[in-house]
Length: 198
Image (cartoon, rainbow, N blue to C red):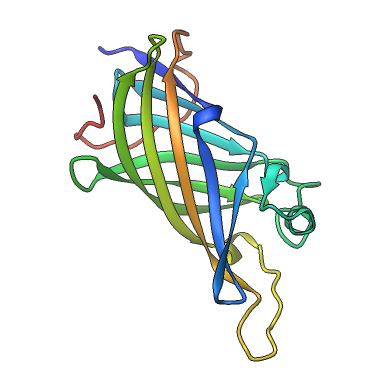
């Protein structure tokens, strides 16, 4: 039986970003500066991955202090009462050689909804310092109103100030840990037979 392997997010080579329509004509982009995850695999097979990711909504950065303050307010993330955004990934489907669909539960402001994310597996490689790394590009789209992020303003000519669809875009680099994981940690997944491995 293959052993459990713990993977850690490399925060210096990872990004969790999003974009949303503004005035119905352009996209405003933002990132979360503080995030982490608990990730375990059986051997090097990422189809067995047990993923528990958390994000600090107070770390949101869109390049505008006023806009960031509004996003942190009760109109949106309500960071005074909701300290974390959580994602738990537990189901995987293979699309083609390096493309997969990841299904999981996203919790924002205490509301949990099932979402689908598109995953591109970049592979596993050893860096010049001997650390084993794995890379993923992750994209998806959600409707913010599903989590009670309802604030908006009508435009004079019709339409909305802020779009309802949020495009998620993540670049994730993982480092294999030498730590022996606690196999009782994290939840179960319903992985299929295909492997995501080196």
